[in-house]
Image (cartoon, rainbow, N blue to C red; front, side, top):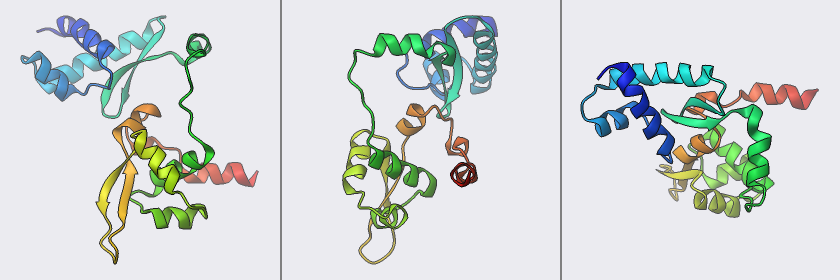
Length: 177
């Protein structure tokens, strides 16, 4: 298939997918194309979609491609979704999630040491929302459970990988000013 034949197929698959689709998954679905051809077509499609004056952007998130709403249109989308119940996290859950994101893999006692507060219920909430996952056990006495962020975390926060998290130094500058 040519790139021009691949692009509408990619656009349709990415549009209907609930999660970002990576080039390997797409190649398996199409069954006739190499991962490199898929990546080339997806990159070209990304440029085309992002150059249009449409309501969507195509972004690489969590190692795959996803269509997202343009940020400048968020107020209109927010109005539409306003009637739906909120799935917001408490301040404790957000703090715990930040500690886990920056210090992973990490145990509950280590989270307590950083936050200075018990985080057991926040960890349960984050596990229930699939924002964090178990990463095994720490090889120390008692073998406490280790936690880290999940693919769902990357998706919800629009990150391709953890290297896109803001630097901690940037936060320190904000606090000191």
